[in-house]
Image 1 (cartoon, one colour):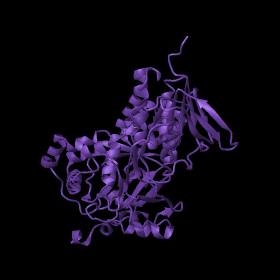
Image 2 (cartoon, one colour; image 1 turned 135 degrees about the horizontal axis):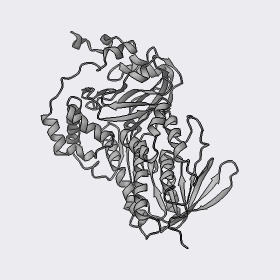
Image 3 (cartoon, one colour; image 1 turned 90 degrees about the vertical axis):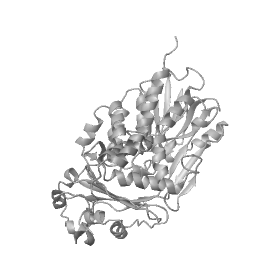
Image 4 (cartoon, one colour; image 1 turned 45 degrees about the horizontal axis):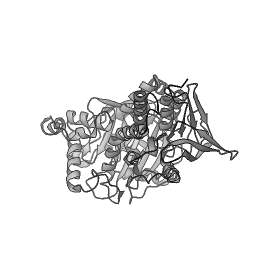
Amino acid sequence: MTTTRPAHAVVLGASMAGTLAAHVLARHVESVTVVERDALPDEPRHRKGVPQGRHAHLLWSNGARLIEDMLPGTADRLLAAGARRLGFPEDLVTLTGQGWQHRFPATQFALLASRPLLDLTVRQQALAPANITVLQRTEAVELTGGEGRVTGVVVRDLDSDRRTPLQADLVIDATGRGSRLKQWLSALGVPALQEDVVDAGVAYATRLFQAPPGATARFPAVNIAADDRVREPGRFGVVYPIEGGRWIATLSCTRGAHLPTDEEGFLPFAQNLSHPLVAELLRDAEPLTPVFGSRSGANRRLYPERLEQWPDGLLVVGDSLTAFNPIYGHGMSSAARCAATLDRELGRDGQLDSGAGVGRRIQQAIGATVDDPWILASSKDIDYVNCRVDAADPRLIGVDTEQRLRFADAITAASIRSPKASEIVTDVMSLNAPQTELGSNRFLMAMRADERHPELTAPPLLPEELALVNLDPAALTPAAARS
């Protein structure tokens, strides 16, 4: 009697992408093995395998809804653990290159928490099914099989150095930015993958602070962006509420700007952003950690679906496939989109060995679902000075840079003052609408005809919010605007 479902799948990496992929795989195969290099903590702790984990994160509503569909109750568990649900744009005070964003009524949302809490909450439920086994302190060494089909993976126990072959009907690479996929494929005789890279040289520095009493529940998130009309390296700063009554403050810059990684330089950098709001919030706040820095913010995309023959039995998801500048908050939502696509496509076929080329078709579908976050991040970063580009995507090269910049400025200028334009841009940035919506007739009409609110001259903070954090509104308003 033949089985109606594949016997075994192996997922490389217990990242957000890996755990969600393993969870949906468990619905379609007899058993799933997750191979993870780290020892996975049973409480919210940072680990080496999540290099961006110490910086500010948000889970956009598109990703949150997809995860909720896969893992019912996730949002409630996060909120019970102290995460914050923010309505966008209402619960965000943001300064763009075109001015302050009006806090229009929320049309989308995001969940804010530390990355360790987000990972742990998802992982505990995602890996709970009885047919999922997790091999910790274990790494993938090589793929087995040939250029037409991958049949498994050889893994190495980091403590004993013992190597073990794992046979599999399907192997999924979710090892992230450090993936060795290109080397593994080369060893199997698979042609080199096409790759696009847009690297603005983004650096990050993050520190946790004790927030004023009640601020993490009633004070908005703050985002100070670079003035992209000025042809100089970008400088950014955010303050997000997270669990434990804390603020997470992340400062960042693009190539050519100096980002301090010591405590002495942290506040002065914030003071010299395009507005001092971040520095004013942190000036009297109690620091809880040293400053943590990193420089792994390049946008990078592989195109396995473009090969004439992609080996069956192998799929690539998450940062192994498409890695983004984390400043846009699309990584976790993209991981959820990959898992949801995998679930849908496996449900359509019923089994992986239903014919040659099934893996390539599934990989094409996964590539399509990460296209929007890819183009949103890369097309934004490509316009920063000193950005290094090695790409063949026609949407990124061979286009009129000045025309693109002018249109981007027009989008921002409309969205910060027009409720309808703001709603559409928020839908796109939260991945609830395709990025092509920004060129639609509906959006163009909103830009031209919708009522525009007056330009704001100071952060749109309410008196009770200012009182909560003991801020003097005069210190946040330019002298010219007060006179």
